Length: 306
Image (cartoon, rainbow, N blue to C red):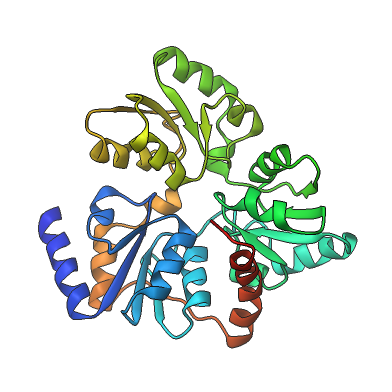
């Protein structure tokens, strides 16, 4: 079968099976094209909650599918590839953070959305990369224990100097691997381009950027900017998607090494198998986990996550 034939079959089957297809922005172009909804992880979870379909297939990684299940426990949620995990989300577990939490009894525990459902059950507030500064600023307590991404936490701390933000040694290995050297190299190769980076990059990289923001914010900035050339400092799929959305503009990689294998592992055939009912991993969370994990997410919504 050709790519187009597989895509057509997926579209036919998802409609026949009443399935909502979600695709994170880091997914491949052929998957994004057949998805019902694309975007950042929390955006997808909120959209799935409003979707009329009772079955949701997530083309992304496991913590994203878990968040969908937490917000829509009545729905059947399937992760398109069973092995699509997230190294950052899996760096810290409930037992580890319970011990650390005991050492910081007066701190509000803030969890990045990129955490497991189990870890969310013992956190106070959840944040996304786009809402972290806004949410933490509104937390009455100035003492914050932020996990797991120390780079996003450092970005927030720089924006909110009045807060005392304690960071742990965790983060995205893909974003954290990029250094100032890569910025200087990319700027030398493309001197007229603006540098747009994700806050999961190190402080030395974000300090050199023209714009720092979430995946969706990076895409929106590039689409709406009058500038014509951009260096993209996040997963390289974003540069691919922007080439389609803005054919008159030029997009370059900050580093060709910024490839997430967990996002890349899901193929169009994996998705086809899911809508056929013979593939994927169904997300099964017990009622207590869903109830407890939802507390920090509801708190984020209450504080006005943008």
